[in-house]
Length: 69
Image (cartoon, rainbow, N blue to C red; front, side):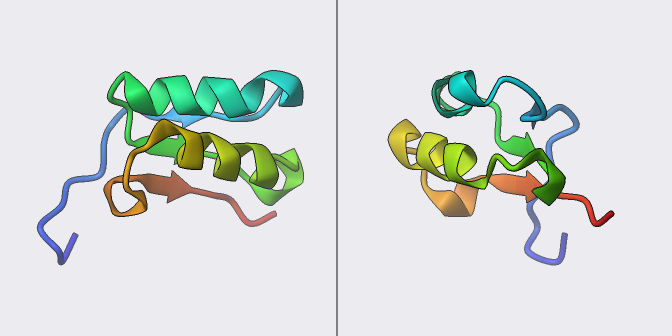
């Protein structure tokens, strides 16, 4: 990227199981993952947002990959 940052090659997908996503996103970030893969059709915006907030990781350190369908 023009910032000098490298996008991680491995990310965390948020497609299924909405009841588990908040905690799963939080734990993935706390374990070192920095790429979250999602899409609006997954309807996971709230869970992903809460998981990011709960992780304590600064938003500037996280890449969010989404899709347009």
